[in-house]
Image (cartoon, rainbow, N blue to C red; front, side):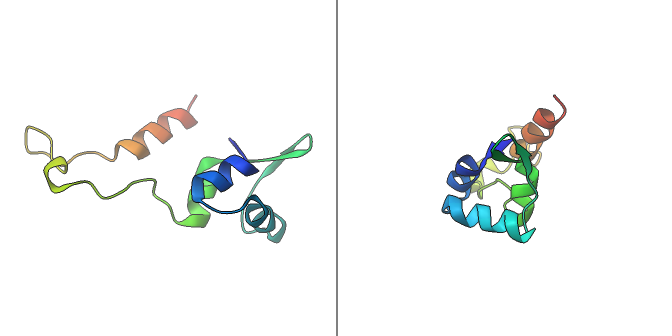
Amino acid sequence: MLTVPEAAGRIGRDPETVRRWIRAGKLRAKKIGTQHMIEEHDLDQVTGDTGSLPLPKEWQTTWTGETQPDWVRLIRRSRRSL
């Protein structure tokens, strides 16, 4: 879970923009005490961010010639299950 400033820093936006998205219902958040907490996958859905940058051509396959798995997605999935 991310705070508003953490989420804003991750997507390169102003924290007030993230707060506006929450107030408008565009971004789901839970209020814990005085802070809004945002799930990473909710932030990714709003921004359309898959969390991955294009790989250089030589990194797109493993040493055995198989396509590289989406490591970012796999790590995020494993963190959610904790």
